[in-house]
Length: 108
Image 1: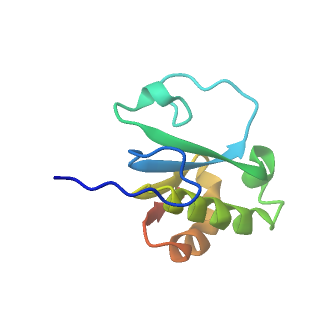
Image 2: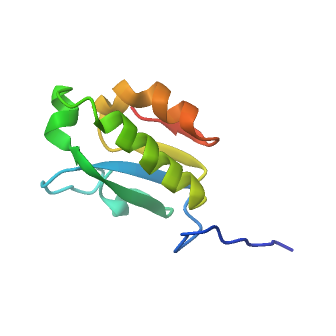
Image 3: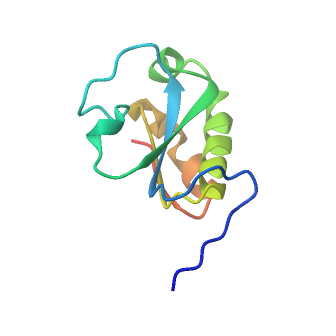
């Protein structure tokens, strides 16, 4: 028998993958990480406030690393088993994100 536990602040469960999302205002077609139909399993998207996609790409905002860490901690509290990001340039924060929680994190 499986036992289920809720964590404080958790509003759903069953998401094996959590995706940290920079703020983009573009369409995401099927096959893109940010289109839920890409996956045949549920994913938990988390928009990280203040992390603008253009700033992540340009590497022009050093504050987004801490915001991504906070987002990763939130996803971990919600029960995801692995975390990724929706922009390869988030790799600049790989060490900070992966060392901030106990679930696997791969930001690129």
